[in-house]
Amino acid sequence: QIQLVESGGGLVQPGGSLRLSCAASRSGISSYNMGWYRQAPGKQRELVATISRLSSPNYADSVKGRFAISRDNGKNTVYLQMNSLKPDDTAVYYCNAQNAYVYGSNYWGQGTQVTVSS
Image 1 (cartoon, rainbow, N blue to C red):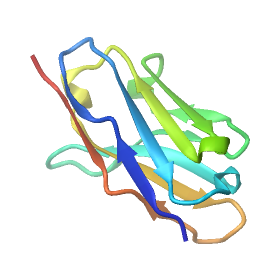
Image 2 (image 1 turned 45 degrees about the vertical axis):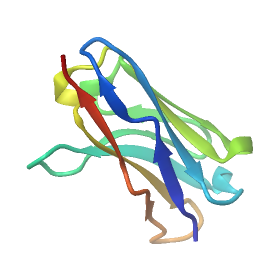
Image 3 (image 1 turned 30 degrees about the vertical axis):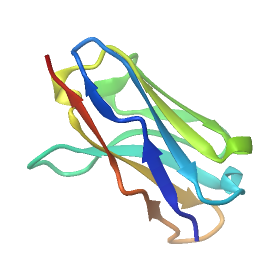
Image 4 (image 1 turned 135 degrees about the vertical axis):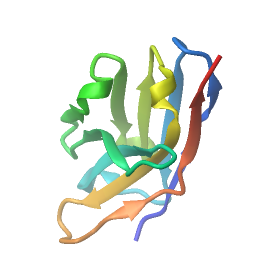
């Protein structure tokens, strides 16, 4: 099993930036495809960005060109750099990990709140 802990959320003005971090409880995340998802009040959880175990990124259309996902396997951490934030980006952001070698492996963090408001 793997536990995920997100950090870096907070209140930011429109146009501002935040960097979220997702720290895994143990080494070996190089075997995991990692991702960030978000859930706004009254809405379903949606994909924001994923990064494969080979560091290939994928983004939702709504964040392309503004967000960047990266990983540091040596630090067991995945990051989400968020720039040019908009009020519509307000949500709880969740980290996700899926072991590429274990069918059905799917882990979630507890989430971190991001609020974009003036």
